[in-house]
Picture 1 (spheres, rainbow, N blue to C red):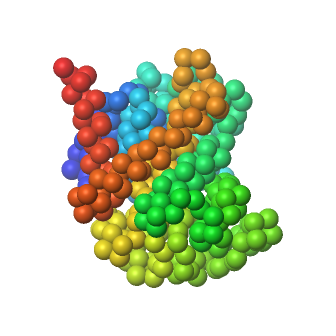
Picture 2 (picture 1 turned 90 degrees about the horizontal axis):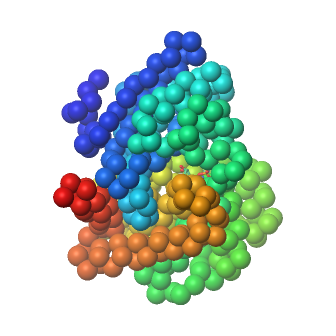
Amino acid sequence: MELFSHPEFDHHEEVRFFHDRESGLRAIIAVHDTGLGPAIGGCRMWPYASEAEALRDVLRLSRGMTYKAAMAGLAHGGGKSVILGDPRRDKSPALLRAFGRAVAGFDGRYYTGEDVGTTPADMDIAGGVTQYVLGRSSGGSGDPSPMTARGVLMGMRVAVRHRLGRDDLGGVTVAIQGLGHVGMRLAGLLAEEGARLVVADLDPARVEAAARRFDARVADAEEILETPCEVFAPCALGAVIDDRSLPRLRCAVVAGSANNQLAAPRHGDGLHRRHILYAPDYVINAGGVINIAEELHPEGYRQERALQRLGVIAERLSEVFTRAERRGEPPHRVADAMAREIVGTARRARAA
Ligand code: NAI
């Protein structure tokens, strides 16, 4: 398995592998960039099919966190942890404490938090051995999903204004894929704004709830991709825009919370060619990290401050769309370049 020449390596500052004999912990922590400040990124526990898959995931996710934090205007870099294992079977307090010790070893250059397969209660345990843990069950910033949904809503407004010249979301049809923590909240916020909703989820109970509460039309998991709508909002899995889905989309805007929505950068180019405006995922879904980063404010976490900071999502997206239009380039490429510019400037300022 290669590291320095790995296709996703992208100048990572540090990648550490951990093993704890007693608890069985096998983990990788990647710190991509601390040019803007200490890295932030959650801990994912997943039964990876191979070590190579785990390494690829942690490298991609930690780089994504660098871009996300930079575009959100945070004084933080990007990092991520993965624990190799099945969270239902392999998780134990001893394993989480061993993970906490691994985080402690970074001496504050990396802050962890919950992610897929870990919970605030897990963070309480890991946080028993290190202070560099965010998102604990009490005294912290709480569930990030409401902030993420609110940020997506704000970003969606910007995208709709830019692409369709409409000032609000009233009467706009939004197709939401995934009614989990973020998708269901987003549906509620959109319904309040008078948007027309079409929804899909693999869980029929969630779909029924959305249909009942928000008068949403129901589509199945395949139909949602080709639903005629103004906005397609991916709020389920990553890599939803791929060779198969791209030609089927019948929307003007793609704006949702899912991480890594493009299977590959060329799919963003494909959206651009089809005149579908793509709101780069790590810009529009930054509400969660903006919220959790507030825990590190010298006066402690305050929700009002986090809410105020969410405005940066709309500002940045607007900047991305304007630059993209001026240059005739796809927004995802413009956003990547902007994020690299922000990090590069911070690095040079530090070095000077
Ligand atoms: P979740 O796990 O609560 O919800 C995901 C939902 O999508 C579930 O209801 C699931 O049944 C559904 N789903 C899965 N596959 C589907 C498919 N093929 N078609 C339709 N529905 C499907 O996750 P959550 O927290 O709502 O996050 C959603 C996305 O947003 C994820 O990609 C996550 O990484 C991303 N995200 C979440 C943040 C947060 O604050 N929770 C922050 C930033 C990104």
